[in-house]
Image (cartoon, one colour):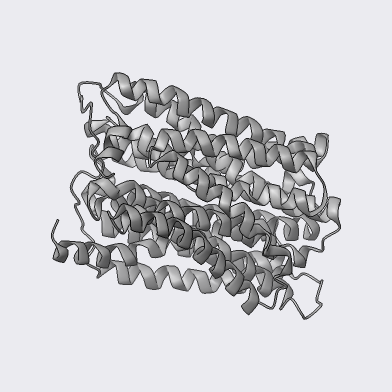
Length: 478
């Protein structure tokens, strides 16, 4: 690919990742809404997780609606209306959802709040189905997964900022001393967000993004298209479960953290936002680290960037929290934990199955450490789960759709459907917490990581049997 093409693709990639930012902003903001709604509406821990259920189940509902429309019209909806139009439509749907926050906040209606979040995520479902494969398409296929990882890093810039903005809207600045929460104050950031959705929809409509991109996923090995459905491929079926539990452990670890810090450690709700921000910033730290190969083929430069990128992302987190007048002293020690991420990333050698196995084992270690300790050690342990979840999405996504050939887009839709795990697993952990305690409830996450480790081992054999070898790609500069 020549230099001009690279410039053009990066010019298309930059406006595309704006929607990745939106997904992260809203998803992480839910972790602030959960404790606020729990107190305001007198909910149990399990009931408070309905915020996550409403948001993440909407992804499944959206995928089902997409497939039904495609079936009834005898053609793929996205291919018919184009990728840009699909993204714009998804943003408009999400904007409509934010409008519900106005009457919901004024009337103090929890069901209406949930309905607004559901519709926002319904739009996100369509956006995700389009944007993930499109991010892979905008450049050399050999760096497609790294580009998806980079897009995830932009997503986590949103997750880092989101909790801080929403917390500020509800409680004011960190130095104000305000501990009173107002449901009515929730509507302002979401109405502003809705306006941003509409603005970006217009900008994307007139951008240079392709309406009909070429095949977005190509891997060496089997391209057998004689199978009648994507569900005939074991790597996809097992990968769907992997996406379910991955999103589940990623979301549930963060969404139950506020209750743990309040009940077990005595934190005030208004003081939890920086730690939720750190959790989601941890995903940004890991994804910036995993994306360095998308920028250069120089192996020596990659080694240097693997140390620079994570601490640059960590610096973004510190800078944002400094701007919000939060005390940074508790967070400096986290720089040592980031070294574990760097070593794990180097050990994976770019192989998605190996990375999935190593990071899943580290996720188990982090959760068990958090369960076995108390105080700030447990908080850092639970927060570090974000580091080890950081690159799992592109790993699972790449492994699950490898070798699907013409069924790739169908497989992608099935994977997006399984994002509902974020709501179901969060609710399950909340239920376990009600039955025992929040400390013990993190065993749910341990089980999720155990399955991911199993999938990493199992899918390696499945793909090798189909002639797909990611170690070969690494040796060729992947």
